[in-house]
Image (cartoon, rainbow, N blue to C red; front, top):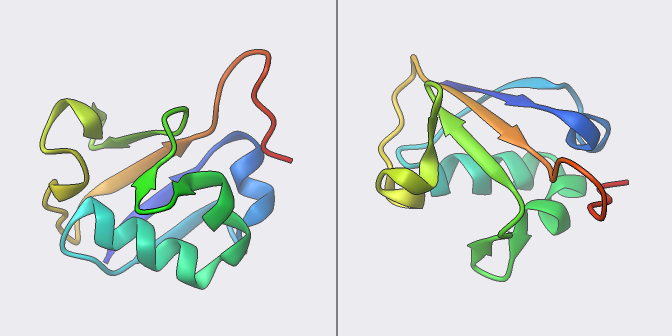
Length: 92
């Protein structure tokens, strides 16, 4: 299982700020994360895509700079999810 670390206001919407999640791709991991933590769904997803202001890193590299949500995930990966940073974004 990959480890997902949540930052900022996302932490308050999950059962734990560090969660082990199953999935083969980044999309699978995020879908599973939100299924197990429903409070995250509206903040992370906009229909079938991740909201523009949400940032994710796999092993320190931005998901959107690689294969996006199709990026393969291994059990050893650590995925960091960040809410908007700065004014104008509210995740509470």
